[in-house]
Length: 379
Image (cartoon, rainbow, N blue to C red; front, side):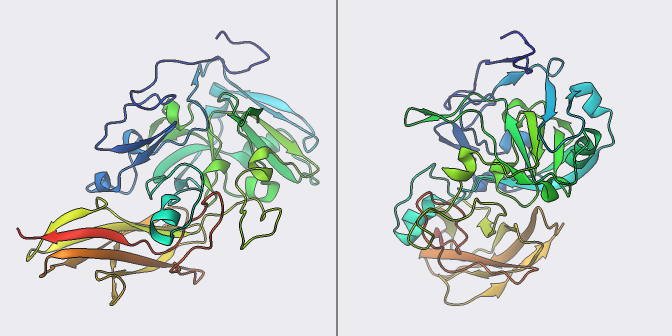
């Protein structure tokens, strides 16, 4: 549709990729598992991929569909009671501001959701991600603190709420509006960036073009894509994404739900197909990655026999707190048959992956050690 002052987006909807409604990029089945309006990265496709996940392999989490936005018409509007000088920024103006580059993981809060059912025998609702709703990229953009200060953020500001330019989200006949959620002003002024590049190139449409938030160590929802306006308030803010969704509901939590989700927890994944077949009598280098919203990963232990024995994995490469660490072990299985591979990470706070995750109705934050099935066969 044509740009208008009211929309502030220059937004339209273009031709989307085959197989998943509302996603622009191709989704070859050897790289992705399609889930309704979402696409999950296959971990077996990560073999040989470096520290950063290329945009063409990066998972997609859409509440609705990817908008196609004209950057020349796009405006970022800052408004609210927590600002002395509300104002707009255009794309060229944003790019002219001092920028930072950071390696940061984006991860859906529902990553691992299907494992509540398959591993713990518990019913949950939502997109049945395994572990492929996570990825690290090198993001470049302007610190959110820079634009907040240019708009005169006040000392009594409490919350900052970005809102996306994707279509309204409907569920059960209810219009919840555009995706939005508040973050505390202290976090907004700390390490959040308004990113316009991913791995050295302009953001692809599915990943937030022209500008998105990147909120290190927090659930992916906080890293609002296609951001169009940011409310800064001197009083607490809320949205359906902090009241109806992205809270813990279940027997282990208060009747009205836990607090809105913020930081991610700790996880590990093998770069291996689920149910992979491996040849007996041959050495196999098993590779994986571990990460934590709590801080830097300090160690990973791996079991190749369903938890009976454990050995340390060798960590290598970058050990960044808001990203992940890569690791490997070598295994030469002698006997054929089914096996369960397990990886348990520890972070710098002392947090260790547990054996089970407390159940919650929406299947958020599955952090238990995953039992990865493989079969050893004769060569």
